[in-house]
Image 1 (cartoon, protein in one colour):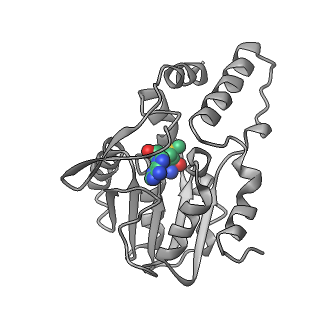
Image 2 (cartoon, helix red, strand yellow; image 1 turned 120 degrees about the vertical axis):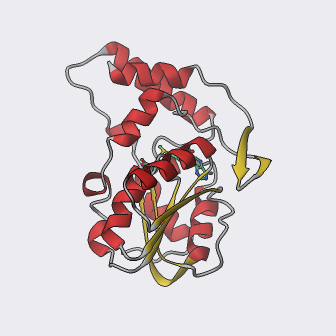
Length: 220
Ligand SMILES: C[S@@+](CC[C@H](N)C(=O)[O-])C[C@H]1O[C@@H](n2cnc3c(N)ncnc32)[C@H](O)[C@@H]1O
């Protein structure tokens, strides 16, 4: 039923331009509407994530001492896991939402993870120079983006030549509920409709490789 409460919290969110902050300057960024929102049930879902489970495709390729960017880091759960793996290297987490960034910063303090920093930024305009990172990462972000190729090109800009990119996003066509539950089926269907209306793509998972290629990344 947790799933249902989360869906309800999503359905009650409005559409439109949202406020964002960068440093101490408040500004309004044009953006997609982030469908899941930032309510308690959504936050609890993010907090259950671990790099061991959700970034297993990426972590074996990481090395200690590298500089890593986590785009759309949310509350920083995965970012902090990644920070432990690359220590004494530095991980930077960026997110459009100030509340998420504050949560991640507080959590880094609680865990005494000094090699992790967080800031408010859009993936479309990353506040880093060209070639700054050895690796760039985004988990559960691309399904929310209206312009995924533009986002990937910006990730590529801040990545050093031959650096590592890792993105992971769902494809909701693969969601199967057992035992069959019509209410949950309807909830998932509605969520997908809302996400598409908000500029996202619930089926982006299958498109990831093509999007990487279109953005100029070599894929194998
Ligand atoms: C589903 S959460 C994923 C959080 C984290 N990566 C994880 O997997 O636990 C997606 C996050 O992306 C952020 N986001 C959405 N659009 C963004 C954008 N254009 N630039 C940066 N962050 C964005 C949202 O604020 C949200 O915190």
